Amino acid sequence: MEPDARSEIVSRRNRPAKAPLSREVIVAAALGILEREGAAGLSLRRVAAALDTGAASLYVYLSNLDELHALMLDAALGAVKLPEARALPWRARLRALLLSYLLVLHERRGLAQLALATTACGPNALRIWERLMGLLKEGGVDDLKAAWGVDLLTLYVTSIAAEQNIRRESGQGLERVQKALAAVAAEEFPLLFAAKSALLSGGGRSRAEWALDVIIEGIVGGRPPAAVPRTSAKRRRR
Amino acid sequence: MEPDARSEIVSRRNRPAKAPLSREVIVAAALGILEREGAAGLSLRRVAAALDTGAASLYVYLSNLDELHALMLDAALGAVKLPEARALPWRARLRALLLSYLLVLHERRGLAQLALATTACGPNALRIWERLMGLLKEGGVDDLKAAWGVDLLTLYVTSIAAEQNIRRESGQGLERVQKALAAVAAEEFPLLFAAKSALLSGGGRSRAEWALDVIIEGIVGGRPPAAVPRTSAKRRRR
DNA sequence: ACCTGAACACCGTTCAAGT
DNA sequence: ACCTGAACACCGTTCAAGT
Image 1: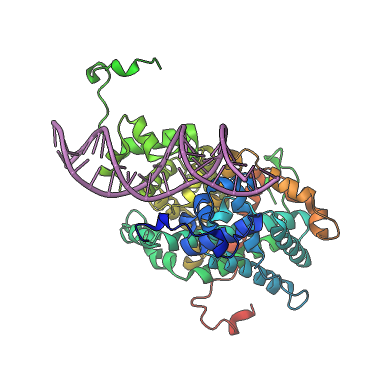
Image 2 (image 1 turned 120 degrees about the vertical axis):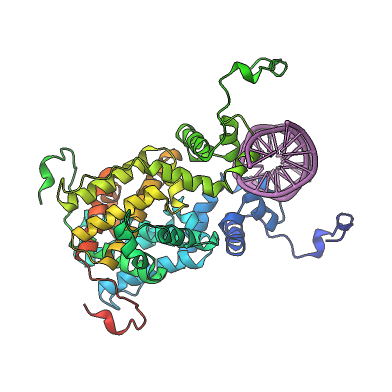
């Protein structure tokens, strides 16, 4: 940046006309910044700067930062691959859908952190819910369990993606946990001491796949949720 | 506040001597602010103000805000009730421990949000891990599955607490989801349309309890995680 | 060693003023 | 209707200076 850059007023006519603002343009710019700078680098001011305007201008299209986050998340969820119907058994298709969901959250830097605070419920999120519901029902799960199951599965996918995302961004990653476990005394925490390596074993990917199978298994095999657990003392026995 | 308040310089001698700073004092003050103001109201500057000093003073005891978060979380986890050994069958004790964990995160306003970004691994967190490991092993789960299971269970508890916490703080809560579902067209999303009420049914508490049972069931009943899933093609059949 | 005020480089949001 | 600059009320972190 030259010292006298300010005096060089370049006519707007000389550059491609500034793209008019719109929700879509703003969301695209914001996703670009998220990709390049990570979650910590995303701000309304930066988005505005990328669009060659001031932050105040964005308030014509957004009511606040949270709304931008929701729009960004749903736009990004458009990349989740919905498996072809009947191409594979329902379980494999369910796994594939969840893994694609996980991958999308995982690949886009910082996206999972947005997802945590936002509860996706835009059109792309609804498409995913619809498919998940269908796959669980194909697996013989009743309506109520399927509904709650969709919630549980999406919450898990979002959480694990965010956890790994945060670890990646904050640099140090697992080191804090590693150090805490290394300092564990065999007398105070015998089980942790014995299982140190197990606790740290496995990549994020294989752990996530295992956990998804555990949850799916639990949903398919478990009891139906009690309709309205008002008097909880009685129903304890299975 | 009177207009001339600044001229009334009150001698420090007239008030109880300012408590000397220490990690403990800082963490306690920070937890107080979290309780009163919620996660959005917590800042180093406010903590410092509550301790009658400037933010810079805290850097003698903390290397940054993240460290304060970690200390706060572990201090708060001291309130989690570890069930008496052998008082009940292992499953009931496991449930009780997880519900106490959930309750602690849920009751302290804003705490769950800290927990999401922090991965608890202080002494109180380790105590909880040790017990969870023990309970899963009592249930016949092998070492590796127990270790991964502890991770999965604590991640879920933290996530569900944070989700409900965020809903509570951001005021509107489920309304956005409710509106999205209300606008769903029967032709585009037949399953969601049919399951609208199921998706919104149940309080946070009963859903969380159901989900915990699902996960426990999955861990106890599921296959052991593959040691190193290098060649994933072969092991597909159960 | 501990504490402090001031500064630096940021935030989201509002609002009066311009076109 | 849309856009803008300036202002308001905040942030975390650093640093030179004081005790």
